[in-house]
Image 1 (tube, chains in turn red, orange):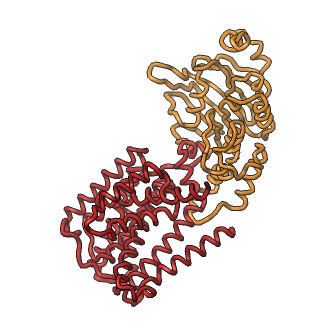
Image 2 (image 1 turned 180 degrees about the horizontal axis):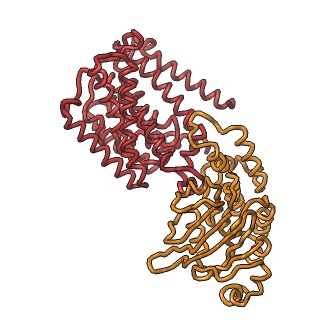
Image 3 (image 1 turned 45 degrees about the vertical axis):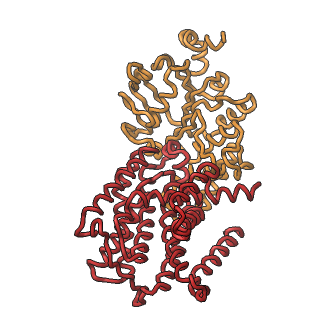
Length: 316
Length: 244
């Protein structure tokens, strides 16, 4: 490992440790609990956006149906916990990941046959089908009423239902996912995905089965979105068709683009910006309009997102 | 090594390949020449599987290529240097070559960096094509000549048995042409080469034998000397070069 990598890892760990202990050191601040809740949600959506970024930013696959795996994971975790009558984290989280991965395998199998805009439309259409199922399978998902009463999980006999324990669970999961994505994107496999993004034709001529490669990235990204979905189910104790809807897919996409596609930090910053606008701005202000304007500004003036803009300033 | 029989490829009513027969033994360096539109690049595209054949047979080292996909043919040892550079622009020169060489080690190594053997092999290939000093530079920052050298490095990094060179000197200065010609001339003699090239000096220097394509058919085949003396070849192709 180079010195720069070690320094960067040290900074990330220090920031993470400060974040993970936020409820403790901020406890005398009157808004501490509210802020901790926002941070939890930011981190959950950061995991979701980071998983989408693996497709959009690294493999060059613009998926507009990624919420199917977020919501799919949330439903799978909630349903598994209810049907199996267990609060065990490993069971419900495992079900969330497996359910999302399986769904991504089916959707991806069809979608990776198309390229560019057709890939985008196909992911959108298939995700809408998942939405329709979530909406109509009332017995399983609660339909339009949503699935309420999700239990907060237990891990090896430790009850994580207190807000601070859930906070730590989200922080630890976020760190693990980030380390995983860092390792994946800097590995041989990560470079291969970038190769597919840059020149798929050449990759085939070099002996790569690019279709299966894209499917593998799609399933991996789906599984990670499933983790975020399961965490969201614990957080809100509720899963609704909204979680698999187009709006959530678009939100993820906006987070990736605002933060900076193809960078690890970008989607995390993007998730923070979007959720701060949506949840923290005074309610008199039109949050969605502001978000739209911010998004347009980034598309017009900073295509590479926050990370790209900062890099450009640092270089100048 | 390459056995092509009655290979056809139609585009609507146009017969780009109208029944090409071509046999290239292992280790031979064969040039394919002919006027524009003779079907040379189509022949390469059909050989690599980027275009489907309308009819005919293709075998590589005895294996029927039939309907094998491009990536499977590449794994059989077929590599191609493209006429238009097909590089990975944002990646460094070294990473470009690593992408080529690491397909041998498998695409699915999500938690591992390239092995030191792969890095060493990439360095060796870069030294072969004369880009050792440029390993850290992103591909997009290379000059045209260097891009062609990297293009050749990508094709070589897979240790192919058969290498298709599609106009290796296209758009190059005389000095760059000389450099790439020397590089190709110095390649391992066990490698089978199929070269499409318009520069006749390069063709006559590199080729053991020459096949002349005209209107989708092989109209002549022979040693460089035989082809030079062939009247029909002069009429359809070489004559034009001399007058031009």
